Image (cartoon, rainbow over all chains, first blue to last red; front, side):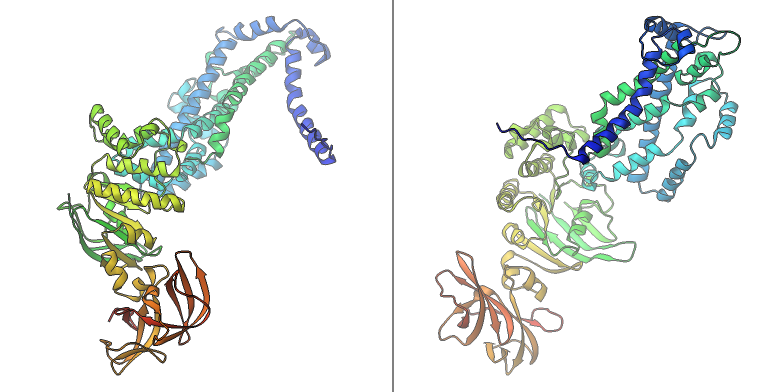
Length: 287
Length: 347
């Protein structure tokens, strides 16, 4: 074997320096979080983040997961974790379901005003929930859906992202496949389940990841519609803990940070495990 | 066994474009009919109307004695093979072939038997559990054929099924398809832009141009007595030589050369058509050509030159001497076709 002496080029060094700096920018706050969850609250209060590692991981974790606040005593970390999962998964499934059906109708059925319908749906991209939050709240309130999972999920589903992605994807599926299925006697329902859904697997997975993370990270809307402690999600619940600065109590930094760490984990895990699906879904055109 | 009858079948798109002008013909049971023409001539549109993938604007379409104008593709008792095979990428070969039967609520054991029969016929037994992406082009083509065969339809439709294959495989599949069609005896309509495929496979050829049927006939008829200059120039490689000529005193002349003595046409300008292989070397022949280029093709040679200043090609055997420069030649009897100089129709 011959050994190639690779010359270190300046551009390579610069590229890597930029990438490393970027990575540090991302990872350091997470490392600080990890460090602070290991320290007693008092130390955190006095010195802030430091380089030492304490022994408080287990107590902080227990507090974060099982200790409840407020009056009812039900908004423990596990409860909030469950609520977050329900929000994330419900939102992702709902969005994919509605988006696929809408895109199916728009792409494969000769409707009058189909493109008008599509553009109307498309304009909802310009109106995220934050913009229409007051009327949405009013509607949810009137329907009696405050402090319910439906109230939490449904208004978030109403936007065009999934419809748009699925429309683009369906349009890239060869016309002949549709025609072959027609000749093979597959009606609209059969075609949808037998051909379209299996073909869209990677796309569905990619959408699921994006939508789950998006739903999981929701903050403003859950804060507005959930006032009952049993309905709190993680992202919203963390805020609740650090708010307790009144009186002479020491804020529970360890517990709040641990919750933050727990809140980061599921999206990270999903992205890591489904990364290949994700990339495939958004880039692959082998149909 | 079935007849297919088209009566004034026509396709007009909403923008007013007439893709297929009213076309009428009948296909007899077991016949292999090839629709051939340049791209955009309406041949695929016609096939898709027969399949039910395009609406019929006017006219009637009968398959096996049944008017099927408004029937769904699935109810027309047809099977179609597509250019890009259109296999379901997520299904195994077995499922691909059986899918049409499965949708018709046929019992599982019957499907299994029919799929086995089709796969044996097509030598696909070793590939039944593979996905289409693990197959070669020729194998995919065979799966597409299997999907058509297994349904036992009244009519096979082929939409340029070989154009995605390389030249060698294309020749092989051409023979396979033809042999299979012979064996099954199913009426078939085959669309292609390749005149070689049309000539070699067809019982009858339908030549189309600009939405219009130019000629319907057996390969021999189409080749030897083309109905129009379009057919003459489209069928055959190299195409028929088309020269500007004159009829005078009952003889057809190209420049100073008399090519036909008893021309059945009125005096005036005319288009003279001569197949390249109907011009033979003859030291005492009446024609003197000026050869500019000799193409060596092994089994034969193509000579490209001029006759009375007009381009033409000559096809000679490998034993025939071939040099550039003057070339004395004669015409085989009956070699000359005459076409109206204006309309291009055969006289």
